[in-house]
Length: 290
Image (tube, rainbow, N blue to C red; front, top):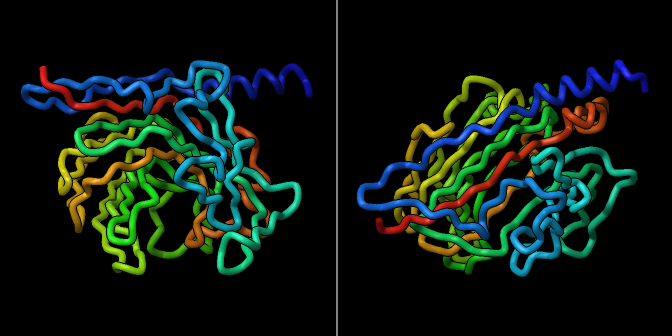
C-alpha cells in the first residue's frame, strides 16, 4: 500500500470522525442531573470496560440473544479506536449454524455485535448516545429491554436505523437510512399480545453521513420523551405502564425487512470504514433534587 493511499485513508477517516458536541439535558424545575458512571462511557481507554459492559452475546447474566439470522453477534466485532467504540460488520469466514437454541436451525453468514449494560435502569433517567451508522444493509441502535415476565416484557428503542437500502427493502421501510425511529413495545408472550407506541422523524442527512446525538428522558411510566441533537422531537405513551428496570443496549444487526443481498452486499464488499458504526459516547443521568 502506497504512502499516498494511507494519507487519503487518513483524510477520509478524519472527515468521518468529528469533534464531540455536547448538548444540555432537559431542564426540569427544582431538579438537576447527575451522571450515572456505571451506565456512561466516553470510550477514551484502550479497552472496553468489562465492568460496565458485556459484549459476549451469551455472556450476560440475563440476556443471551445471539442475533437475528443471517447476522451473528460476536465480541470480535468490537474495538476502541481514537476515542470511539466501533462495531464492524462483515462476512463470516464460514457460515455458522445454531441448531440448539431455537425451534429450527438458524444459519449465520455475517457478523455484527451487541453491547449490554450490567446495571439496570428505570424511570427518572436521561439517556444519550452520539453515534454514526455504518454504510451497509445492517443497522440497529440504542435501546433498552429485559428478560421480563410473561405479564410484563418491555422494550424501549431510543433510535434504530440502517445504513443502506436495497431493491429488496420492504416498501414501508423506504426511509430507514435517514430516520430517528423510537418504540415502546409491550412484547408478545403467552400471556399477552404485542402492543406498542412508535414515532419517527427525518434528520437532515442519512444516519451514515454524520454523527447524531439521540436522547431519551424516561419521565414517567406513561411519558417517554425523545430528543435529537438536544432538541425535543416527540413523546411516546406506552400502551401499559413502563415501570420496570431495563438493561441498556447498543446493537448492530440484520433485519429481515432489509435483507442482505447474496451477491455484492455492502456488508461483504465495502471498506472497513464503511462497514463500521462509530459510537462517540453513551451517557446516562439520574434526576436529583437541587
